[in-house]
Image (cartoon, rainbow, N blue to C red; front, side, top):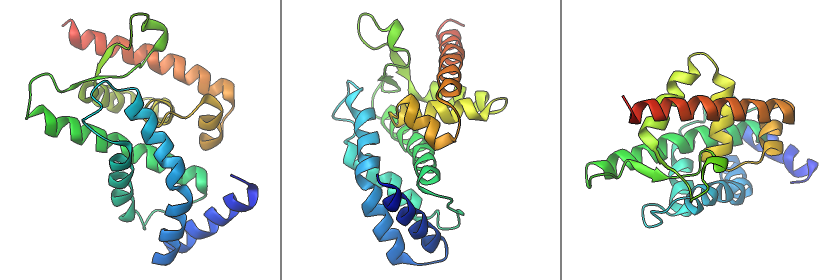
Length: 192
């Protein structure tokens, strides 16, 4: 996205905050493909492809974001960070709803740590991951944001650094530490 387009997104987000519904429609069409790419990343790394389509994920996230008019949008980066945080509960809600339908549906196959996934991605219990992220947020909210942007939205280290306005090294370090902490928490839940 060019600097002029990024500037236009910022202007539209602020207009939306001020109550301009047309600004919401315009900004959502500008950012739709980017959010669809993030959602496609999530869907592509799952084995239960029938559970959710990336388009449905983006639409549900946008539906929840419509109610976020009260957010004092700063810029495109801020919007993408909020969108990533919005996708997380959408996914968890979906797994919870499906959990009542069939046994074992809480386990979603996602590569939380690709270096550990020599034989394919290890299954991750999305609800347990969500609970572990809530625990991590109590003492390190930035690491949670890194996980949300990298894991749920599929952003690269560089993209995540831009969204959070930190260095690439900071994101890489936070990602390594958060992954290790989460793997320990999730494994402890499997082996009480």
